[in-house]
Image (cartoon, rainbow, N blue to C red; front, side, top):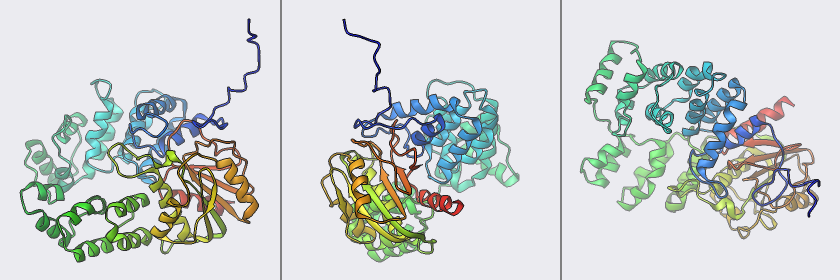
Length: 437
């Protein structure tokens, strides 16, 4: 009979590729599950439902104020829409967390459709009465939105905005808002002049797009998502270029520009200019920065099942921004090997990273070891999904791991400074940390 009283060295958590991962606190587990999460979307190694379930399990194990702050950070800094709503829904389940639900919910609801989306998440496992804190939070959020915003998102789903209004017992700020809400209830809100309405009216598509562009009725996200449609119907190029030049990129994630350029390469120059505009005046990171970008096979998986965007888009977008912000910079890729990338900028840098080597394994440990032998640097920034195949050594000096996935285990802890998410806000976090040091 085999002996059972033996030391089991496999109890330590491991990445999906088998490397030893770090034991981390429940708060850090929740952060890594949340800040790079497109809710219920599967990733290369994990099912989206599994990730959402892990978030639900972790919420009651983390202090209420920490969960509330994380929900706000996910919405404000990382610009995620659905996972903050899930965090608040899970807070509402637990007596220890309920006191912060109304305030947090009011903060994270920033678009009118999120009112109904939150109720849909609340009822995902069955229709139950909304808690008092939830009603209070919805009632506080509802008056944020004017007639245009309500009409734009007054959709014919199972839960309508008028349903949320009745459920929350929201109070209008004034008589004018009360009249708008009466129209919402009656279904007589003025039709918003959006691209969806314009195109569904039966108007000539090219004429509709060109009118919206001339009248500056197309928001930044709508513009980027519809570049292919604008191209396909032959919209006048000068109008597209003018719109890209005038667009506000403040709340647009860098990877969206890279994805847009994939199917509208003729407008790459204008897209690149818009993407870099937000960092043109940014304070430089002093000294020598080395950026190490994961190009392994798992990084090429789509961000969601309906998206053309890949996790590499998120990584390349951050690398492009770091190339602009760092005072002196070298960029490397890693997969099976460590490869230095030519000193390019913008979309040319993206292309150089992507074609630098085959998208195979995740030999992060080997890459870090070799890198420290060939570079003298002030900081090393690794952009990865953390699913290393080999053990990863501690950094020599300032070392950051930016995690762009939500997988359960990771390697970038201990002496590494671990950062979750792919917003440009992660770069500002690095700056703030070093200014405090």
